[in-house]
Image (tube, rainbow over all chains, first blue to last red; front, side):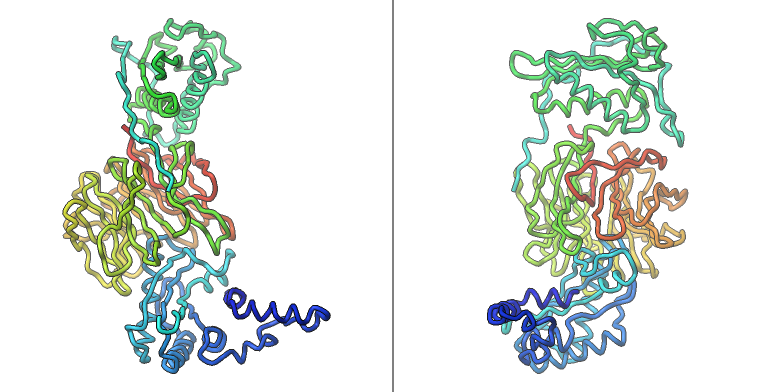
Length: 166
Length: 434
């Protein structure tokens, strides 16, 4: 859900959909249905799509925890390698909490997750000067429902690429 | 930025008492009892040339009824029709319908444009007037006069200060849960006169009233930098509080209004700082590798209660105002957060998480006598009425819906939703207005 939203709001993707829709209006079969048909798996190396689709822009945490899990470490390792290859990017690490906590604590917990993520990336060679952090606490959930599967998607840190050289 | 009209209005010649003789009331309410039987009270339409009299007495009646301590008698049962509110009523007509107290009054538009509102409170079984007062104000302030009258009746019959002439600042929420817009908003304590204070472009959280009622401190994500701000209600002027290197959050005023106490995020830790608003000097009060937040002063300014996860889960701690003598006070099952010291000083309200539920509760400042007032999927963020007898908090339902504000008595009874324009959270009650 979060990934498709990210793709759909990318101007390049929207332009591509529009172009295909116009040229392919005679036959609905030519309309793309998924990222693969859109050719996103061969996203331009070093592009935002490349980072989001092929590296993964987010990691997840256990309840009330800011420990980097093994699955998260694997993602962050790939992020660090990618960022080493494309050093023109600055990043902002956004820390988030699920809704099962009070507002003030969740702001601090989101900040703690962002700090842990930044610290891990730094240990893998990403320059601290290239990174900043922000916490959104429980204010920006991506998944909206009332069960554990939702809450686990919201306990996250998202690495957002700044513009090249920005 | 919508501006508030002048918050403090002057009541010329306020309180002309015209009942000087001492009263020995038989009618009174002991509000310390857990489940008070509401006092039957007859509130007559205040006399006037138009509908303003009935509007004023209607607000008085709604205030008293919502407190849970009064049961207004149905007007259809009234026997005597009050022709002249200055004349002694026919008490047997009121005792016959079991009205133990009776309120009469009038509202008159003066030649100079001001509104004159008067009321008299009668003890129907003791056959005497308990109180009577007269107020002058601008016509647009008619609801405030009604709240002041309701406070006077509440105080006369319970022996405690009222809380109806007060406001609540809160966060008004609109839009889907994964893209919620949040605006600072202010309303009267009964939900009337709600208006927005910010545009909704930035996330705003945790507004708190200054003791002088003129300022609000809150947190905003303005410019992508989550920080604590100060807002002047009359002018709409905003300013950043302090110049800290990281996120500042969870602000609250000191009881004298001269300091703001808040958390500063430093890496993975949050510590508590106080800032003097005149000198701008900041003092660090906690220094732990933990999340220390939600600080709240005792009403005598000598102590601060706060939450910390220094021992693992969030628990309540208290310390002296200079940061010394930090000690844990909550020891129950689960975790505790958002402590708020009562304006009476006798209790601390909190949010408690236990067994997958979120509750609002109170305990004594030494941590003893814990009582849970309400429990459910998600209740959070209590705030005290100025008299320390009622709390507001917000309740978030499971799923995609939004939060609403509720009030509840200190006894745990009389829970009621407060009407707001949309979803609403983070209520903070003002002191009584002046």
